Length: 418
Image 1 (cartoon, one colour):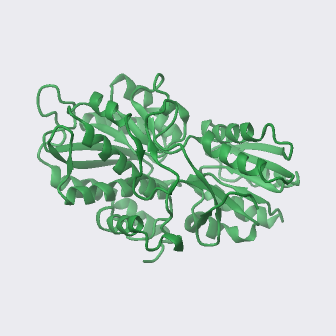
Image 2: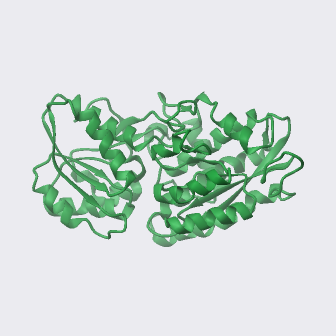
Image 3: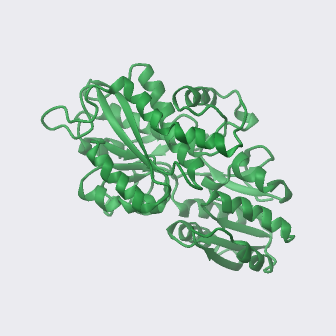
């Protein structure tokens, strides 16, 4: 199985997004978009349930965005082929997935949500992006449509009072930032840190988590801190300024794939080679680190809760083997996934299935209640030491992460910095 590198290959996968929905809908076309009687919510019948995904399928974040559809389609494609999900009310239903491209544009994601309501989607799930998910959060609350297990680390989505119809899936940004800070603080050596962060809630969350973790660490000092806008096409000026700080550790809290690659390249060009901390969603070995020349640095660290199919350690892993087969057959994604979002959305599928199995009523209210009552679920592809727990207010479905270090091909879990 070859790793997809050419842009036209990625576009080929994106072009399949609409086909994914159609292929899954084929098993569930008998009324999947309408309520099935008194008391049933829109989007669920006695035989089917419809889920919607608004995510970037075009633009600079199309790679991870496409994965959010492919992984979910892979999971439920396999489940549908085996007969469907047996719900807690005794009925077996197929899962229909409808995908919508928002191009990482908040206005487009809001428009997509409105379209999903018209299309009688039961719940919105898996979509990538903090600004894009925030764009229709208020509308989802007012219309009581579940917006759950979405790919944003914004803690707002896991606050039950503020977001009663929402739930995040991936660890909140503060948790990831804190994991980096703790690792550095416990190293025992003196470190100077430079920080470049996205000027929004995404970047602020990572930075606050990191700073909280090192605030009492006498061996860690932040010697430079700058921001960039998500719409920027270059951060060369910021990198040049931060390089002058003499930092030996660089925390690059960045969500835009092309900018991470160019940052890795630019730092080498100006002779600055610190160790790097990268967010989980922008640390792909094949899509980011390899083209960025990450091997030139003493260490590239990220965090994870998912097994990496690219890693030799998981080549024969039962979960990984099935995942790759499902991804190819049902997700229309034939290559080794370059982004972790493929694995994350596959786990989302398992988490949704767990909630479905507990539902005794075909309503959104019962779905939310059952979704918030999952604890200790070892979803497929989860690393040992992590699990799905939706019971803690203020935390997403996955709150635990393991710090990992790039080894040239994939990542290995580490307990010490260096």
